[in-house]
Image (cartoon, rainbow, N blue to C red):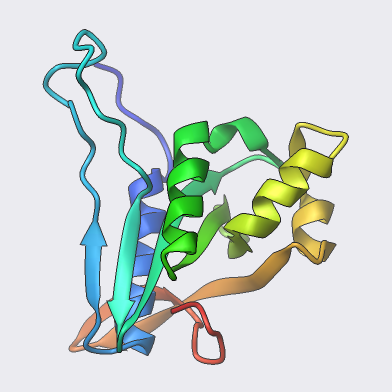
Length: 170
């Protein structure tokens, strides 16, 4: 099996987890596991994971689908239909729901874009393109938060976190 090079999406998920636990203390993080890892696509009964994770804090809940981009473009098709549907259902049940895009360029940028699921669906439906560029992510009003990751020291360990201090994510 070929070894993967560079950052993997799980690192972005962990940065989000660390950030939520750092800024919204005493919450509950739930990483929804990948289903059917042992069966592959050969089983017709494999249920798809609704989204990556959720975080509950003081009676509030937020759901996230995290995507990592290493290029200058993000394709709408990177977010699967069932993920959009499940985030939309969670939104209707009262959760805050986001597509989180982590733009990672080694030694340059580690930026997280939070797009509310309703805004994402509207953007996807009204866009004449099938992708988002750097300029779209940096300057479009559909992006709720554009936050850079930085390093903090917690109990003698260093972690990367996103500054969620003045946000209403959860």
